[in-house]
Length: 247
Length: 247
DNA sequence: GCTTGACCCTGTCGCAGCGTCAAGGTTTCT
DNA sequence: AGAAACCTTGACGCTGCGACAGGGTCAAGC
Image 1 (cartoon, protein in one colour):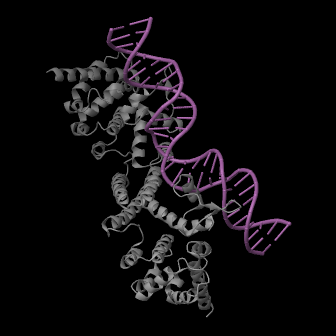
Image 2: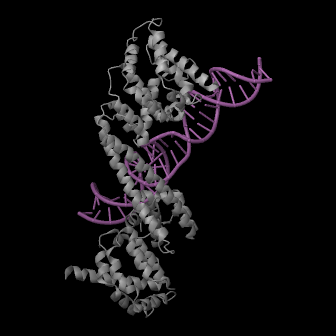
Image 3: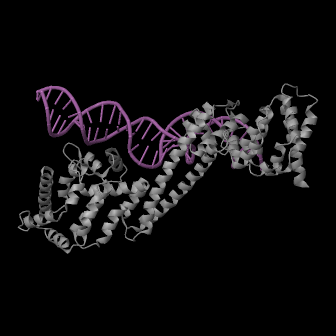
């Protein structure tokens, strides 16, 4: 048989067969005078074994091990390990499909694939016109991705529907073009810091990635006067954390 | 933020981020005077979106499409298609695991992953000492892999337990070192050809890969006298097929 | 004898998504 | 001052082949 014939017989491409030769999975057969490879039935039997094993999902080097070993005991080990690996893949795929189903079936406007807890929280807060609130939503989504999320949502839930909080956002929005020495800044910072629940602070580890790099970068995200507010709030919160740590 | 900080924050490697820059998924941010990249919170938000989408299983170019589109309608299409793809993968994995389970739970000596039908057939035929019978088993496994299998097993099943068939194998085995003009050859070939059921011939398409290349190669697999028998049997069977075709 | 088409040969690049050196420069802690 | 821990670009590695490129070979038909 020539390579195309054995390929058609076993049901693989001739390119694959040459690849198997190249990687030493199937020994190079003899050649005719014109250079064509000449295959025997035994080659076909081996090649068929290779095809069956690769179809099961074994890698080519695992196939090589199995073929070389020929004991059958090794085969069982490899197959068991393979099955475990497939099981992992399967559960991974199922998990992804669950999350996809949530996005596809869920509320129409679920434009971001976030955790269920955060999705619920954001669902209770209809989008207001506040740019600052929109920014905070983005930041929450960011924290959600980092894995920090979790426990802080419960602490934030009551705030979402609090009209006083909305008023705070409006005061912050109003500082968009203001100067950094605007007199409205200190009282707003104090009020904002007071509004942050302890639960939120407790959930953010002080040596984690959130505190390490986020701080300064966060300020660049705001207009000058608003950044000043954020700076003061962060200072106040840091003081509260330190106080709690020593007290 | 520097690259390591944003990487830790979002939960990806800095190498991945540079890769995203390289493929244009995330725009290159500004640099400090020392060449270090400087990231903003907005970068982190985008990067987090990228991470969530890739975790769902989207390819990087699909992620790029979704980010560029930003409509949300496109997203749903991509996600639906992705879900269909994942469903295919999942069923494929399950199929493989079914076959693995058959091998792992099944009879201890199931050393080859073959189709259930062939496994059953081979199970009914305990391994005799006949080298020719062993060769035929190999050939059956080979045909099983090619997909020809199927219907011929039913036709072969009654032969497997027939003592007369075993006698034929013994006569064939006896020709191992014989000359090609051994007088036992013609009668054995006739008896063998007569023993082959019509169902087997019907299942093998005459223009398929089996007939195209296997014929000559098959002969090399036998000792000279045995090959002569096989040659005669094949000729007789070919005549039977032709007769059936014209009759 | 010449063309056409179907094979065959070797060798190389491409693919997804980064991991992993290599070989240097910067910053920071001690 | 030296080490640890960052950062930079660039290039190769991994899987299992598919898809070229640039040729030779062979059988059949004109």
